[in-house]
Length: 272
Figure 1 (cartoon, rainbow, N blue to C red):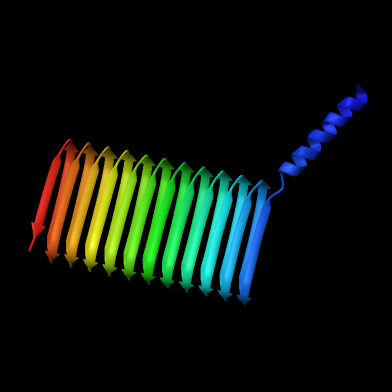
Figure 2 (figure 1 turned 135 degrees about the vertical axis):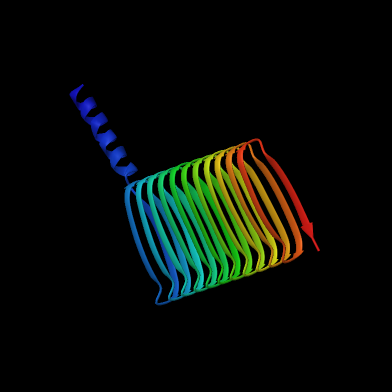
């Protein structure tokens, strides 16, 4: 019996020790690439590929079952990943030159996916909480996308096609959804949501369009569509269950909307 107990404890200790292994696979092809990987905890996994010249990556993971998959193909691209918690995941794909992607996640089961194609694009994701997700896609030059989510179950999707577009989103609360799509040059989209179950969607096709949205409350819906050039849409919703639909096509339209209270509905169409 004593030998049996000793064997069981030995097997348990060996299994526990094996389970603590972290896994890293890093591949560098080219010249003067730099990678720094630090993993502390249980079964964290990192897969990093750098192909080209002077790419840099700094990967830090602390906790259990965090995963990072990152690829830089080109020159002088930069990746910075910090994940603390349980089951967080990050994926980065960079194809081009001088792109920068950063991810900072604290909590449980948060996920970030960032794709950059082109030159000098910048993307950042910050998430604190449970089950938040960010997807950001950039194809062009000098685009800037940032997403910050604090809470649980929030989702942010941002797509930028063109040059010098700027998109930023801040969500605080639970189960909020943000979608921002930009196709063109020098467009700007900024949205803030605080509460539960809010939805904001901004679509910009053209150049020099601006959309801004602020939602405070629960179950508010804001939709802004702009096709053309130099259009502006700015909306404020404070309360619960408000609805706004703005569609602008052409050049130089301006919309300013405000809803204070509950269950308000606004539909605006402008064209020339």
